Image (cartoon, rainbow, N blue to C red; front, side, top):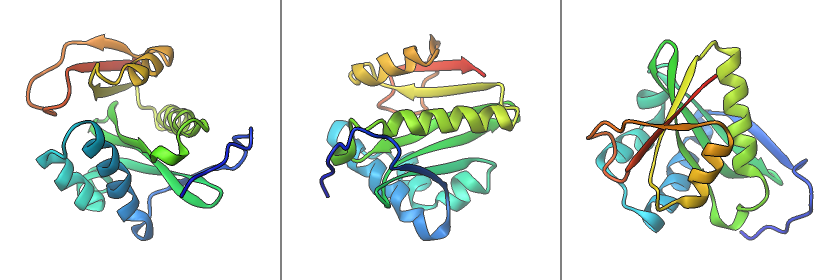
Length: 161
């Protein structure tokens, strides 16, 4: 579905995860993973079983609705009581450029602050230069990347909330 930019982000609504929407986190993430990288085994597990692998482990999943259609998603995956991974973030290609990614990021920061999360980390790839630019704009800084988390990741960043 193609969207027309109406010049307003007022049509964006952020909603919480529900069982009825669980397929959207998989569909949206697989779309961008297949475009730029590949779907890794950890992705298959987390995206196929989001309730068990993210929600039941203390994480959160959010969706962006644009004109009542789910077009984006972002997750906060629990690492420990004070640290979460900002991940599983995707906006369908036809809805990019409408501020949906920004709305999802802002929502994640608001929820992190509300829940006393002290630090967010994310894994990315420098090939996604516009994403890296946005992360830096939001105050994320590069830290040492441990091996083995995601094959596609060649950069790890963090932000203190």
